[in-house]
Length: 533
Ligand code: GLN
Image (cartoon, rainbow, N blue to C red; front, side):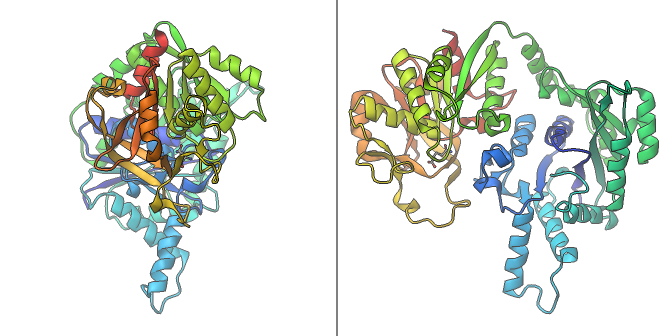
């Protein structure tokens, strides 16, 4: 087997940034000219995160091929620009689903089906599948959760077996936390020692210990960790908190020669990399001048992770445009905020994003935001549900269909401007059955959005069930909310824009999934430029 494997585990506590660490390593190896893949193993029982609430899981990230996945895949793509796929995210639920299906088909006839070896073999085969038939040089596999969790054990056992079977070279990186204890006036390594011990119990000897800490770790502590965890001193890598942006992390790792150490172990030393474009992006980040305020009107607004890709896309575009963005988080749920405060918040923004969402809660707030943007010419980008909201608001307040709605919120409305396609009617399975993944869309050359993209043919990713109802197309077009983008070869609305407004654009897809720090998405950059006017 040619493809080498790098496993990233985490210990002590969750939210240490394993995803960002894994993505940063992938970036550095890609910069060295390697063909890199990334994968995330998640220990929960859902087949995918598609049916989970953002409160549970944060944003659902959608791959080109239409898989609903963990948000860490978003980091992977943003750092490397390499597309992930349905092979890149495997959950315990998915593993058990295939084991049980195989069992019913008689695949294991005569055997007692067990966690070891059947579940672990299934995990291993999914990892092998993600090496894309061995065509990658390196696959980086992040294991979700924290070592010591009951749920992670089959995954740890599976990755342990890779080294034992000597199929390929494996590297195990363990990310831990080294807290600073104010009372003692020093940083503490004990949690890291215990965490490495926990990993040992699973039969895994880490090759690297990456330590998250608030302050730089003194060399003595590195030595202590090296000794107690059985790794070489230079393999104790300190990932200190970056005060500015997560996009500094790859450089932080490069300064500690992580890329060089890894390729040396893997025996695939390649060209030296300078990370020129990335460093230029970071310089631009620090050179931004002035600021503008963009409001994001959502119902999970207190939760950073729920709109992860949107916040990141705004940051990428802010680097490109050269201006700092103050994000105004506007709660769309009037049971949590009051209308007066809400109106004030919207009006103080230079631009508004109405993001995607499901279910009725917060709809009134979003509709009011769309109305305020339309009437006050505030630049506004509606994404997915946001596009549907722009359409409903227009139908109610300009076309005079006061009961206009989406059938998602009012199945009996007489004016279903947003409704289900026949194919979606009666769909019983909630998981994985929406319009998902990247699809080709054609733009009207006379539109404003064409000036944004500067091309006619675009590919964008989708995740929704309801669609703009074409029975209203003519009426909308005639009255100035124009359908200016449609799915290729099908009369299905992708983009609407308000003719009489400088920038009021609704897109049925999710542009945020494709934005990268060194390749920002033009829709977000245009929104910011309009906000500055
Ligand atoms: N709830 C809407 C639909 O299913 C919008 C989905 C979204 O915003 N992702 O069509």
